[in-house]
Image (cartoon, rainbow, N blue to C red; front, side, top):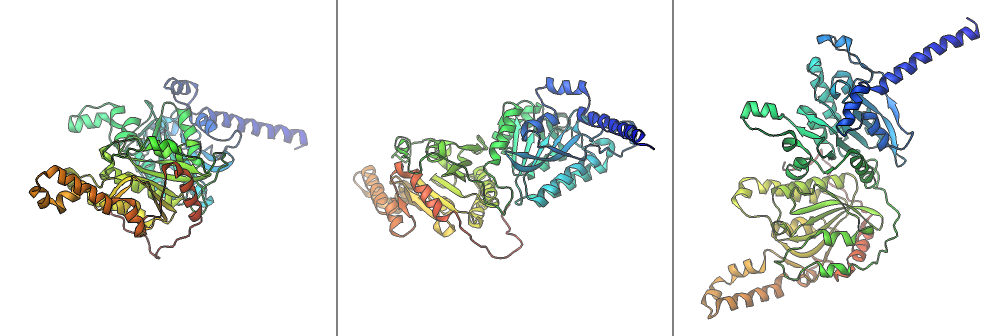
Amino acid sequence: MDNEQNRDAMQELIDELEERREETELGGGEERIEKQHEKGKMTARERIDFLVDEGSFREINPFTKHRCTDFGMSEKRPAGDGVVTGAAQIDSRPVFLMAQDFTVMGGSLGEMHAEKITAVQEKARENGVPFIQINDSGGARIQEGIHSLNGYGKIFKNNTFASGVIPQITCIMGPCAGGAVYSPAITDFIFMVEETSNMFLTGPKVIKEVTGEQVGVQELGGAHTHVRKTGTADQFYTDERKCLDAVKKLLKFLPDNFRQSPPTAQFEDPVDRSTDEILEVVPTDPKQAFDMREVIRPVLDDQQFMELKPGFADNCVIGFGRLAGHPVGIIGNQPKKLAGCLDIDSADKIARFIRLCDSFNIPLINFVDVPGFLPGVGQEHGGVIRHGAKMLFAYAEATVPKLSLIVRKSYGGAFVAMCSRDLGYDSVIAYPTAEIAVMGAQGAVNIIHSREIEEADDPELKRQEKIDEFREKFSNPYRAADDGLVDQIINPAETRRSLVESLEMVIDKNQQRPDKMHGNIPL
């Protein structure tokens, strides 16, 4: 064969390659792509292109096809098998990712579809870089039977092995039903889109048939439900682009893997900037409510706070911010809800967040105004002891820097959880408004001085005298500072400077724990 014949033969092979590439990139075809767009949804490839740095995506296994021959499937073997996988960069940082393609067999998961996902999961873990999954799938591919279910098992295992090793982020951008929901639930973060994304184990039709209950798809498992009611998801957004932008923002707080420190950022916000606006936020009356976010935001660089799980267990606030360029995890009691009491859901929310931050070397800062754990038969019978123990376990186990700012109340077991030096806090700071005691002054006086009050000529006057005396002697921050349980008592206007200085003293903390398989957290 001469050179010209060889070139022609090679060109034919290249032409075939280009045709196959075009077939792969078209997914389920132009008609199905149009239907995807009509629903306000991007295609898998459009989502990837929007998320990653331009030109950085390198696809893996684009020509993979399923091997099923039952139910006429041998005639329907689209290239890619309904999922796009590969490596890319986001803000010049490497990631591996997958995006399910709803235009191809509804994004259903079969044997080879799962093999593609597990391959990039393993590459992400082995290379120590974040893994991002974009879910848009009708669920297990029925025609492939047990092979579909086995595929989910492999994915769940890889999610579990990667947990605490690399950040795992899920975007729910369509349906996610049945066993498919457990992969997102094992990952570190779940973001959803209003109206177009949902998650549930059993759908509305099955529920109606089995229990007689009637419920809509969004009410059952939509974005609002999972962010505000179940706490399964971390945040929702009005459209897919905003959701993907949030992933980019989130990655700026996270390291590539557990062996690295989180990425610092340049900042121009002065470290010694006054936070005197807090003086107008925090009431001196311990019974008066306020929004803890108005104390948190002024302290952070550029007053930027990325809140997670808003609306779920809203008696506490969690999220990310920066102090002097260092990413920090923020946990705050919320006096606007349940007076800031801890309860079953808030304990779960806080414990999960502590372990996330500890996994990826992100310092923790508590903003404390907590009268204790919420009393009541419902809480006790619901297992508040077990759930509260999760939070105590997580705080004690965490080896990252831990700072605590006592804004007002810090009573009883809640003090131990959120402020106790003996639980491993590196620095405890208090405002002059802080009250630190086993219980509130009024409750303590009613127990300790009950007879004296009853026998007084003016019981109410005597009660108030004893309350004032208790606060003076036992619950003010100076008493705790006398005993070395509080490191600093500060003017609220000095909050940013004090927290930055305290953080920088311990930012390189290296604390070891006993050698063991793992702790037995009271789940």
